Length: 224
Ligand code: CTP
Ligand code: MG
Image (cartoon, rainbow, N blue to C red; front, side):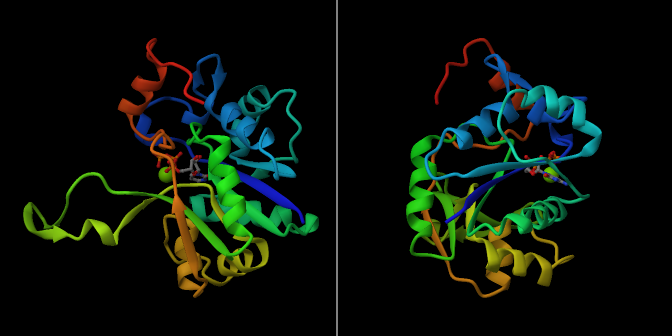
């Protein structure tokens, strides 16, 4: 049984307003990417880690992962979906059984999340860590509120999104070009049943300028 973590790091992080991609930001003495990658290298049950990067960032990447035992990087594409497909294709020669697809920009997950993902993957083809909503959700039409959404019928998707390799590779090939924002959406299109498990409140994605301010502030304590 071969399980590979695919780390998505080919984005440019435009929403942070930084002049370099957010995965190369320093946080408590190491880059976001290095911390994410170490989380998977240190986890039980992960055989290899492959990072997908923009080849333009190769120097930043090499510096960020110096000394870590990784598969050679794969080049990303224009969209996250293209980047994931490139990464999955790069894994084909290794014939993995399972793949955990994770955003480099989510460095705060714990080993427990990986353990629970792998446990769920024993019984399911696709597993999504997700969080129940804490806020009340409203539907809108422009600037008008049109209703209240049943909070019990929605969850917020996180990564790692976990799959048997064959079915997700096939879904990526089949629905290439169909605009989706995560890999579970492709599993849905392909009719693959998806099991959700509890994510982690701390497993947030660094996305905005505010996120950057928080993680680079002096008060940040190590939460892993
Ligand atoms: N990603 C990727 N290839 C892309 C776009 C995104 O590998 N073409 C990765 C990012 O590096 C990130 C993850 O997918 O780790 C989640 O995407 P997002 O948070 O949207 O990051 P960016 O696309 O880099 O940021 P932005 O949308 O603000 O430009
Ligand atoms: Mg993006």
